[in-house]
Image (tube, rainbow, N blue to C red; front, side):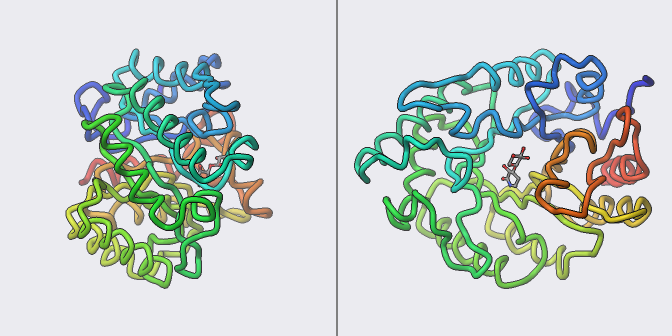
Length: 310
Ligand code: XIL
C-alpha cells in the first residue's frame, strides 16, 4: 500500500498542536497497514482502552495493557495522545454499582489519580467528564449524578488537576456542534464552571454528524472559545447512507473550515471497517476517511486540504 500523505504538518514538527487526530484500537496495532496509516495523523485517542470497564475492571484492579500499547506506539512515533475518558455514564464496570456514595467518591479519586499519574507527560489532555448533559439540557442520570449529586463534575476536574497539573482538562459532549437546546445548556454549564474557578481548559465537541451542515456552527464554536477554552473536535465522523461520497467530503471540509478556533480535529476510527457508526446508527455507515484496504476516500483529500489551508 502506498503511504498516506500526512494530515497537516508532520507529527514530530507539530508538538502539542498537531491538528489531526484519530481514534485507535489497541487490537489492530499489530496490523502493519493499519499502523502505517495511523502515522498520517499527529495524535491518537484510545477508542475504548482508557474507559473504566477496561482500565479498572475490578475495584482497585487496573489493567493498563491495552492503553499502554497505544501510548507506547504514539510515543515511538512522536504522536500526542488524548485521554478518553475519566467520567462517563457508559462502559462502567458493574462493581461501581455496589459502592456507597462515599466509596464511589473514593474510587473516583483513586481512578483519576492512578490513570493520570501513570500517563503524566505522555497523555497531554484528558476528557475528564464526557456527556454529562442530556439532550433536554438537564444533567443526565448516571451513577455519578445519582450517588454524588451535580457537584461530581467540578469534583472530577479538581481531582484531575491535582493528579496531573500539566494536563489540559476537557469537558466533552455530542450534539452541541451547531446551535440548539443542547449547545445552550452545555454552554451555560461550562461557563458556570469557568466562572466558579473550576479547573477546565477545553471543550470537546464530538462531531458525530451526518452530511447536513450543523446550524450556526461557526458562531456556536466561537462563543465557547470566547470563554477562554481550547476547542477541539474530538470524535469527528460523517455518517452516510447510500452514495454520499461527495457530500461527505464537503462536510469534513466544512467541519474544519467552520471551526476557526479548533486546535485539533480527531476522527473517530481510522477506517470504515473500524467505525462504530453502523452499530450506533443502523442504516448508516462509511463514516470515516478511509474505505476498504485503507484506501483514502474523497473525504480524506477534502479533510487534508481543509487542514492545510488553515
Ligand atoms: C464508542 C466506541 O467507538 C465503541 O467501540 C464502543 O463500543 C462504544 O463507544 N461517544 C464517546 C465515545 O464519547 O467514547 C463512544 O465510543 C462514541 C460516542
